[in-house]
Length: 353
Image (cartoon, rainbow, N blue to C red; front, side, top):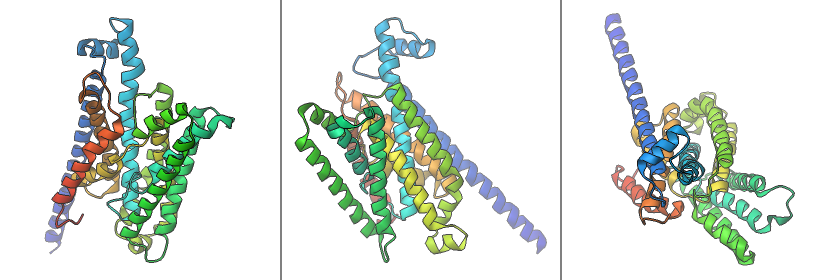
């Protein structure tokens, strides 16, 4: 009997190792897709630069002409890097939100967090003339603040007795419409110049990306990722249900508060610099879940990579659908995300996740 038990235990250990390496090999595949999207993003654009000139400019730091160097280093590289960072931030925040709310429809966009961040940024654009700080500081701060307020609203409803997944979705939709209505009110009273900025920004666009903005986004993403990593096993335990997680020693209330704080920061800084981008935070976690499962140690980085790859592909599509023009990235993500999400629903067993 002891020999049989040891053999069985050894077989289980080998199966676990094989599954573990298979999951990380799929994560490596997501890295490859994101890298391919990044390279295509740098290589394409309305200027129609030769690929050889772009590659030379990236590798050597200087192109054959000053115009090529300026386009690649001042426009294309910041845009391509921003697509990766923003996609990763939205994918990561969506994965955490779906986990802590036990809701596959949860994301920063569907539950009004992005709309809250958008309202905070629009508030600065329209009424921020009297603020003592420049817009580069006040817009991210206000976006994160109002994203936190939206998260607080969802958390209060989630903490209510007998709150269901459907109730959370409805509450998120209510917050979404509330902040959209407030943003529309700001547009109504805005000056023509401010109105143009708000409308362009609400469409979602990567074209105003700069290296200083990218540095801020990378810093927030790295800090958020480092703070989330030690929480991975507790988030995995939370997938078993609140009662079981508490039985395993997890402080569920504290975990949700810290998770919402990180979601606010990730969503707020992304929306503040590139505008409202939908469906990335909703679809990317489902892609990651289909590939690697629910183990948060793999699921969280896979969701970030899926979001980065998805937004990079959307960025390439925004520049190639109409040669010589650039579509707002928010429109592209919706066009890609809606049919993809419908396909996910149809592929699920009996409509259940």
